[in-house]
Image (cartoon, rainbow, N blue to C red):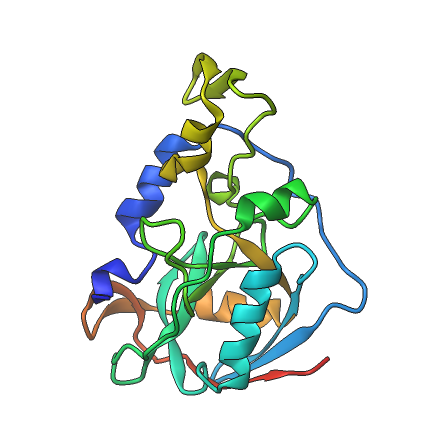
Length: 231
């Protein structure tokens, strides 16, 4: 996987923004007895609460990378103010770390279970244009990003009525909507419950070119020193 294909790019985000039309509320989501992971970074500590009952495969995938120490020594390589910070894939030399096979996208299923959305502090999987390509990289939303949410397909086959990009479609085959890449969005699997000030600190850092990336790389590297399960 080449660097340009393995990160959440501006072009992909712009495409999502142009495509998404269904806005959602930014209500909080919490789960009792949810596992938590602590990221000790060079900028401070961040604690993430995970939701295995809503996105079980995604959470299991993330926890396995934590247990394998995959994230230790990786950097936040993409930081865009008023949007998100992304990391988990590259070391300080900008070498991409090897990953396991991708995890199946389950963002839509998570929403159907009442799961979390891409709101401020929510943690989601980064991916390429292929909805089922997420592996280890993740991002933390630094604002409510409803346009990144999966679009839940209304019931019926064919779907009697579906509104998209300001147009109304009638009697659309359900499978066509379920397979449409632009409707998948990004799978949220957790939320920052401690250390949002650290996230803001990273978000505010000066950025520029770094390694294979032409922009958005913190000029002072932000290293994840360790990632551990704490509950």
